[in-house]
Image 1 (tube, rainbow, N blue to C red):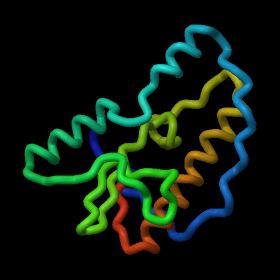
Image 2: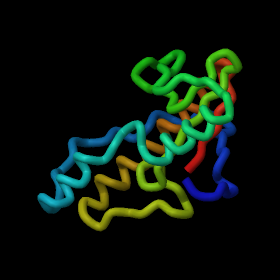
Image 3: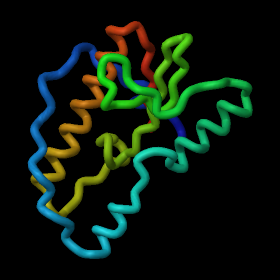
Image 4: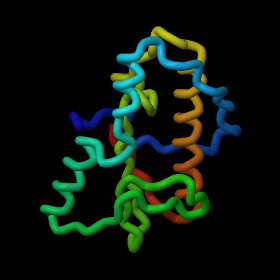
Length: 140
């Protein structure tokens, strides 16, 4: 999970325009990359499990993969619904961490569009939650 940094608890000033439309993936550049990407976890990642363990040992109770109010296709990694606190554990690659994120060399244009769409979705999610009275914490 790493130490916090200046971009740890980012929150947008306003919602961005519609996220870029991501075209169909052109396909993995090698079978090994295809296998690795297909095994990447979407939830219950090691950093999420570590944070949840710390929270649980501290006596805090929370909901996991909680549906986003106003957009049930998205979910909150760790939610405290009673106090309206949403905690996200963002991976540096998938969410475009300016400090640790990397840019793929294969299919560069597609990945640039995909990662920009992910960042725009994160900003939109933050805005939806803020309008619903939630506090958002994002950790890399």
